[in-house]
Length: 116
Image 1 (tube, rainbow, N blue to C red):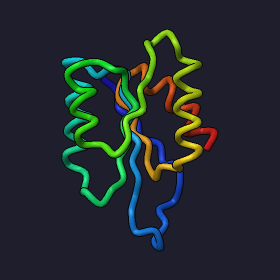
Image 2: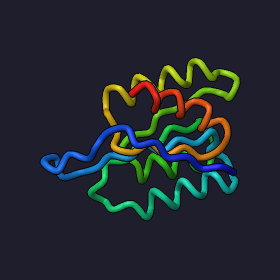
Image 3: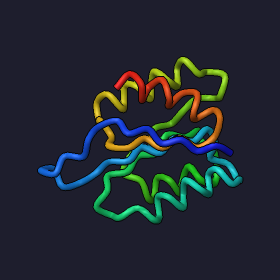
Image 4: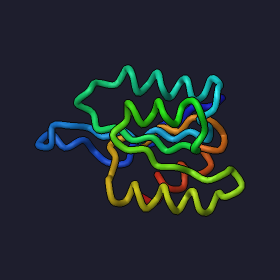
């Protein structure tokens, strides 16, 4: 699977914290969701974290336990809707870093990162 990171804003030294938005197209059993969970676990607790993923077990619950925000995505065929949801969230929250994991996540994350 391909992994892509998009920097959306310069870190603000006055703010003191960075925010990370992790985007994955899946949350069921598999390597991609496990990779995102590993990233969540390895990020310092000072970081503000958010995960955008589909509502699937077992990882959607695990993401909720670790991430500050979980943005539920729709099924893959709703690319326009998912891009719009992601854009609205990213425009409001201005994450320092957006990381997408997988083809579906990259398709919706790259345009959002380019617009911010």
